[in-house]
Length: 187
Image (cartoon, rainbow, N blue to C red):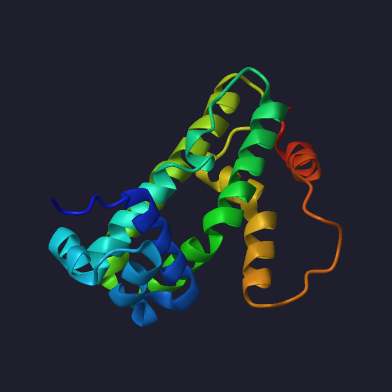
């Protein structure tokens, strides 16, 4: 009887290796080693490295807290939850997302995984739009507002990934949301 593969463990290993090494240097041999499976099994199941990386990123990004944020009647609480969920997702998978963002243009075979980012962003935009519709947030493109909201964490993550020390206080979701609401609350 063939050994049952823990696909979650396999996908975590694939995403970790991808984040650490980049697409070109990621090998199915290293993924198989970290996941405790035979490399041949990866090729039988996924066909090639790109298909495995796409499947792994699609699965893990769909299961992040950022992908599952829901809208309530409390705009401040919802935005804090959104910012915290984004920060948690960055903490867990940010290296993979940053690697994907920088390498997708050079490796078109990663475009499927790029599409996996969109549901998360669209969910966040729907939250913003719901609060715009209820009169809590100013009008404007909801996706642009999401970008403005997560930009401080995104930039900090880029600097940290580059090894730059970011001066200033620790990341504070409450302060980020307060600043955002200061400029984007409905009048």
